[in-house]
Image (tube, rainbow, N blue to C red):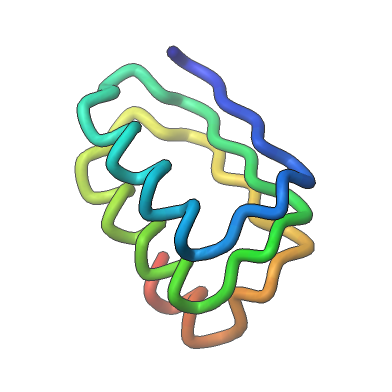
Length: 76
């Protein structure tokens, strides 16, 4: 799978953990869009863990979530 869009799906940190585990072995993902969900700083930490082995990822869409400054720093 190269592109995944889960926009407006009410994803929170619990569902982000499930997504992180599900995508762990996917090495071909280049675009992940998670716009307009309920992702907070805990979810941002999980996204940061997911990104560690996703060197091919070129696009990450996270607008309209609740990540905050601390969550953004985790991802960066």
